[in-house]
Image (tube, rainbow, N blue to C red; front, side, top):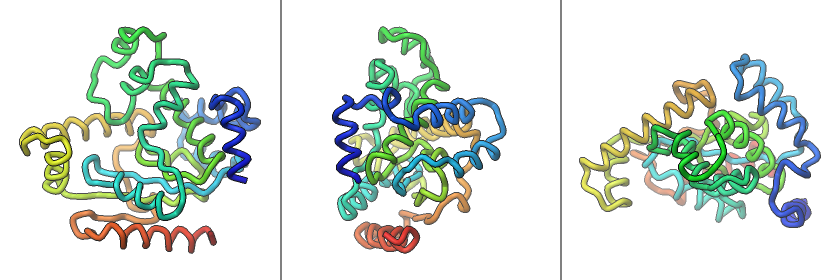
Length: 249
């Protein structure tokens, strides 16, 4: 099944909306999702949507906690692709927009004048609503074509909850500062500034895209505190075990 769906993507040049049979149904739901309609009703529709998708592992995280490394380990151990920033390239191909323009609307963008920057990059008008709509459609398509580990962007809120194994990765500011300082080779003061800015941008993204102001524990199958869980091999094994138990994989 996976091979045939990968071939489907390759044969059609990677464009999502032009050939997927379920595109119209998902596109209509995407429009509802990014509107100001009742999200509770929309999520019930998402849950009932027959989109023929694989169960997906979705990581939600405090930026800088180290969740991507764990996600990559889970992907390697379970033989799944890991989608983080690659989703920007998928949306870029689908919209025929510059990937840098798409990136300005991503959850970690530090930019403030997003629409203006998009125009400066030579692309047509594009806003956060457009980005969120394409994110919704792309998440469904990727979940349909192959077993996938998604990192960030609230994709666990867009896919049917019954087809999602959702993981929340958290950590103290001290841990995050240490990680960012090491990764970006900056001092801790600068790392703290970058994290504060990123947190603000992420909060804005979730408020506008998902109408969420907090990540409630009941939204997730697992919550991992990186201040206390240091053995990533053990964490990856635990995720695989619980995922397989839940989905009988």
